[in-house]
Image 1 (cartoon, rainbow, N blue to C red):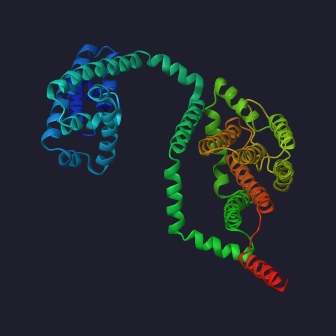
Image 2 (cartoon, rainbow, N blue to C red; image 1 turned 90 degrees about the horizontal axis):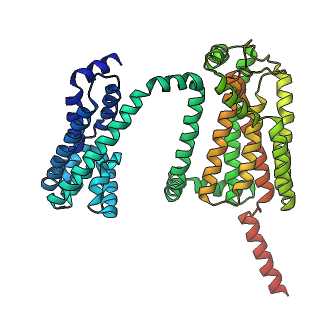
Image 3 (cartoon, one colour; image 1 turned 90 degrees about the vertical axis):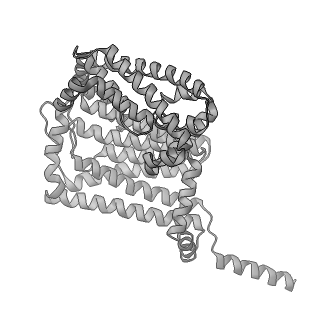
Length: 455
């Protein structure tokens, strides 16, 4: 930061002008980032905000003009050389953008990160009239410079307030907010790419000869291909999670390997706690407690009774009820004491390994998502799956953050929950799906034909 501050204070205006000039011409450089940084630095009184905005505006306008003529004279070859392998995606997005907004795309492209790099090049490649390009280019460069420079200045002017807010919320709460925001972004991305996911799955199936394996397994287990795949996938997932749990259990009993870092990790995470973040994670941890899981299970069970889905009701009871009993048994096998933080937000009694909250949250929310997703479309399934994954992740982290569990307790709870959930889902599918062995079906058909001929 000291080096960056020295660089900005010495070359601030020229640095902004040069980076934005080259970025606008078509090079993928962090011109916008530098504009925000120098504007924030101007809030300390070392640089002029007006000078920074003017430097950015001139750099954007002149750079876009150069990019326009590069695109007009050199076209795709020069742009490809500048951008390398990324140029195809950039140009494809730029073409869509220009076709949608016409000449106004020159103005709007300045505010779109990917399109901004190739916007002027595309305008030249598409032979846009230079007078029209210049008008929209100047307007966009000035508007963008004023907006981003002002935002950077306001950010720098409010750094003390942001610092106080950071100390109040704590890194843990901010990390949780980022995780939630990332989950929302990921779910939206996946939900919009259904065809891509399906095609990727088909390519993977062909690459590993999954269809051949399914047919072979179906013959061996006297089942259909889908059931064979579910059983094989469930066995593999359960074996992997079981191996993780076994490794953690061995370390807990021997007090070796990863358990040696439990106390250090716990103390470090606990040191991040603030009053507000502790309140937040206490609310999160309640979502994995009996006070929430039991009423939610009863509500879901009542809905399944109303819909007369008896097998699903049994799977829910088997998952949550059996998982709760299993967790109690495991705790009394390992008899691991809980962490002892004197200043913890709250304390819990009982044994520590594996974490009941982490395990039951995987079982209840995982089974609920599985049962509810059966009647949903692709977008709904993706959002529900990402939500459940994020919730289980936050509940597990809350146990460490509040000082009532070690890291290995949470990891063991997740692993045990995945094993039991996989067993419950595979059992439900095995009971629900019809079995159709090819040899049996063939013998039934031949028997029917023989009987018909006899009659």
